[in-house]
Image 1 (tube, rainbow, N blue to C red):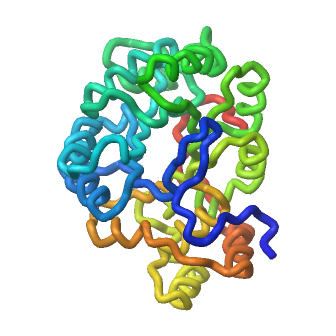
Image 2 (image 1 turned 180 degrees about the vertical axis):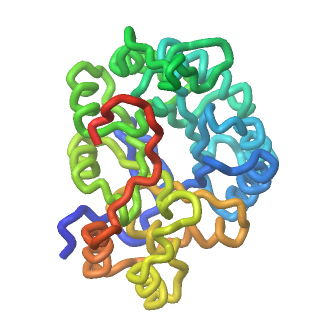
Length: 306
């Protein structure tokens, strides 16, 4: 048997600590061009997706909103996520208001703090820099203070649940020592080359649902070229992407694959059932020489506890 938690075959949603259901597979929109993302979102929803992941910093929430509207599916049937950017740590509700306006929505189902790194607010600069080129971190503000403001948002009705993104165990421990509301989710880079076993175990022990962005290994999908992933895919007559997404789902992790190709969008949400042995092999793939890799690592200039 696998030493890691496994969800039931065919399970399509996980329950958040708010009681709400979050779809196991969602469409990621990071790095999707605005002129393509509208059709991608519309295509995804029409093919059965009910979960769309967006963020203020992606700069294409208006295009995402158009795709949601064009799908014709009632808002009540959808699960929409967005994220508070680093320059808005002192005013998360203001960032949410901008996102809601761009998306054309009255509320989101999940609101995340994108990174635990407050940046100074300097006009319209998205990543303000110091004279030496380093990122202008707001040293007089903490992620815990941001969370305190986040905790007030569900009462406004603008976000049904709140959570975090890119939080490590040390950061979560510090947050939970002061939090009145436990984050509903923690969205991080997660794939077989970076399985995040300890973080998954910690979050699940606290009732925090893990979400995997870049579940295929970020741009170019390097994980999909791996020989083990390809051999398992062949054995199941499936695509390598289905193997990786199903691996995450069977660990109790929400997967957010990104694609703008309708055929891949449709295939990505079709989960397959992996055996305990296949799960174990994928769980340990990162131990092979040269496999372990973190692909998303902005130079924040702070120790994120990774």
